[in-house]
Length: 385
Ligand code: AMP
Image 1 (cartoon, rainbow, N blue to C red):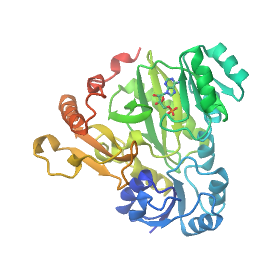
Image 2 (cartoon, rainbow, N blue to C red; image 1 turned 180 degrees about the vertical axis):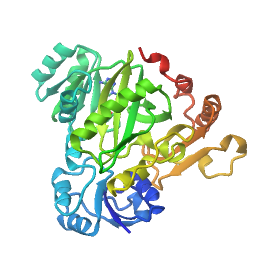
Image 3 (cartoon, rainbow, N blue to C red; image 1 turned 180 degrees about the horizontal axis):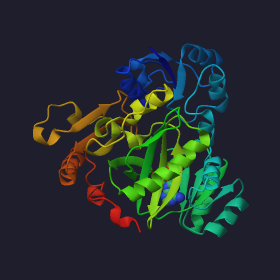
Image 4 (cartoon, protein in one colour; image 1 turned 90 degrees about the vertical axis):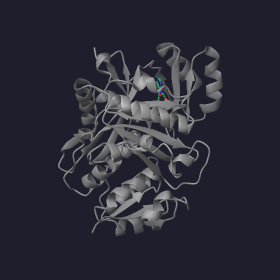
């Protein structure tokens, strides 16, 4: 029996623990939130990220420590790493916490990214815009997530407004990418360096937040190109665990946006749609076990559920035949506007059947008007030039 310590007790930790139950693993979560939703599945140390006593307790009682929270302070992760093995390597965490370090590393590794400049002062911003032109995207280097801490600069007057909003922090200004689609590649690398990759996933965002993921969506050539990019990052860090790389596809070219050194929202479909989920393979990797197959078990389309769980998830539904192969996941979090509180994955063998049921579901969820499911039809093979 192994004990896994997790820095963070949110839904990612919860789904890791769910996957770990059948593997005979036990979990301890460190999270300052009293209502951390993973706590139902293990022991919860409720303490701040920099609480040295709590960090020592976690480090001493765990066989291996991982994280579901990207902003674990560097000192806390380093302290834990002095007490027990931490996977993925904390260095990957530190780089991903700072967009400038992250983009600079990807550039060094030959991973294509949109042109960018560091911005600390107003003249820096003006100089960056002179090079990049409008539109551009201004982002905080740290603590940005789900579209927060960033502004699209379209007009000259946007510069002053966004400087007022963000200018008190270290920033990065990037070229705006008018992408054709967004996608993400998720991979797992074992302690022996062997890597496996799930099918490249197509993603739709609404207001900066992931709304839908669909897989598989791309041909083998695009898959191989995305795999080669994430492989460079994983090899650089001598990585162990699951990593996600978010990408833009524009005119047949892949451009990296950011990587996440952890299981990722766009990989939730793997629970119901792949032979082995990202959560199980992350645990296998950090425990030194052989990795499971990442093959698709069926086509899958995932909706994030924001704010509150819809009644459909719990009521007995009359349209039973439509609700086959619809898999609800409730994170048992308190409802709050915009909060990720669950997800639902539709699986199916045929593309048309999948999209028809997804359209019904979108209607039930009240998002049909905002989400263009038709844009997700078919593969993207033809985009590859
Ligand atoms: P991020 O926080 O960097 O993951 O950005 C959140 C979302 O904003 C992305 O998924 C994109 O939809 C959009 N976005 C971020 N950077 C750019 C960019 N340089 N050009 C166009 N859209 C962007």
